[in-house]
Structure formats: C-alpha cells, structure tokens
Image (cartoon, rainbow, N blue to C red; front, side):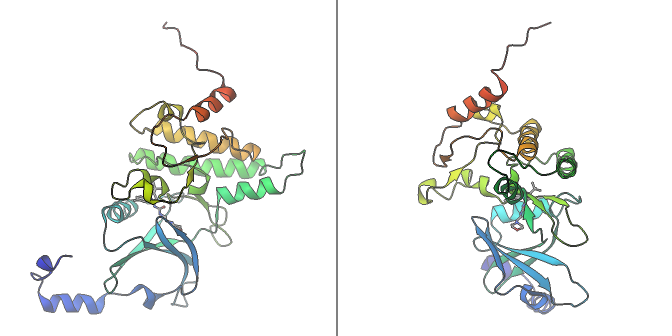
Length: 276
Ligand code: 0ST
C-alpha cells in the first residue's frame, strides 16, 4: 500500500489488525525445506506447527515484492476454485516486513513429467514400459474432471503439459491429480521482463495445438483439449507423441515449422472437408 493511502487508515485500527495478523513463520515450519525455485518464486515444503495438523503443505513465496498484477490474478483465481482435481489454495499470507506474498497450497509430491520420466527410464531397450492401463485411466479421468470444472467456469489453462499435472503422494489423497500452473508460459506475456534478459531457455511446443502454431491469436477450450490428448498419448506410450527439437523461447513468431510437420507426419495432413 502506498504511503498516501495508508495515512488515511486509523492508526489504532491498523495496529490492532497488525497484532492479530499471523505471520507465516509463526504457523508453519519450512526452514531449509526449499523444494523448488523458478520464475514463479520459491517453493518450500511446510508442516503446520500445530500438532493436530499433520498434513504436508507447499508454501509458495511469490517472486518480487508486494501484490503485483500477476500475484493478484493468481490469488483472485485460486480463491474462487474448489475442485478435488484443481490445486487448492488454502491461505494467503502478506509479510509486511519484506513485502512478500505467500500462498499456502496442499503439497503434491509428484508430477506427470517425473512419473513419465520414471517409466521411460525403467523401460528395457526393446520394450516400452508405460504406466499400467488402470493408472492411465485414473489419471486421465481426473485430468478431464478438473479441466471440465475449469472450462465450465470459463477458466482456460493455456499451458497444459505433464509438468503442470501434479499428483499427490502418500497420505489420504494418494494418487489424486491436482491441475496446477507453474506459470512459466506467462513469461511470454510479461511486458516488463525483456526476453533478451533471460538465459537461453528451451520451451516445449509438443502440447501446442496446430491452430496456435498456425497463428491463432486466441486461446480456446479446444486448445486445452488438444493438450490433454497429447498427455493421454504420452501416458499410453511413455513417449511424447509430437516430440520435436526444442527451441529457444526468444523465437518470437508463433509459427514453428518443425513442430507442425511433426504433427502432420503423425496425424496425416489435414484434408479439406467437402461441404455437404
Ligand atoms: O498452480 C498455481 N497457480 C495456478 C493454477 C492455475 C489453474 C487454476 C489454471 C490450474 N492457474 N494458476 C496461476 C494463475 C498461476 C499464475 C498466475 C499468474 C495465475 N500455482 C502453483 C504454484 N506451485 C508451485 C510449486 O509447488 C506447488 C504450487
């Protein structure tokens, strides 16, 4: 909050709110438990200090200071959502001393990227070793349930890929899918971060629908469904169906020739549909 607006707040009210406000480190143990660092900020695995709560949580410290527009968007969206297969945000902490924003989220031990990688690694040279069919069925069913919920509320994901499909580990919710968004795709749209400032990072277009690769400028539900189809195929074979050489994210055109050709070589070229 800016100095000009805070001077209008009654100081007594302000100090009483301040005293009542819980700080994240008073309620949770997470020191030395960093589990991730990305463009989205830092993520810690956390346990409640209350002995009656034995669940594991993820604490995400949002990158940057204060309530940035993207922090606001993430909080505003997540607080509206309530579905067993969509990441559940339990609480937001505002740390006034260092202007940091923390999100408290249920901890999911796995994600589909690691699960598929594990299955690829254990395959013998000749035999494919994809996840068992019942596991694939359960995962796909849950992904569809979560995405149906999001689409019914007109929330488009826009970046569905195995790394964004979290899976709960040991505990009451073992095997439960939680659709998340680690937020990497948003880098493309972040106007304040020049792409040239970033290290060369490859980005995958394997899950991108052909209409996007051909220049469509709007996301649709169909674009998410395409990505789900790609993930389904990858679960069945443990290989990305539209595997393609990856490119540096600085490439600015939507047209990715190799990626489109890969899709067409697997699916065949689109045929003109005769008008009936
Ligand atoms: O997943 C996270 N955020 C999230 C989820 C989603 C949907 C509901 C679409 C699946 N959107 N977003 C979102 C929205 C992300 C960024 C912005 C700007 C807006 N956050 C999860 C963060 N992870 C980090 C690793 O540990 C678990 C939590």
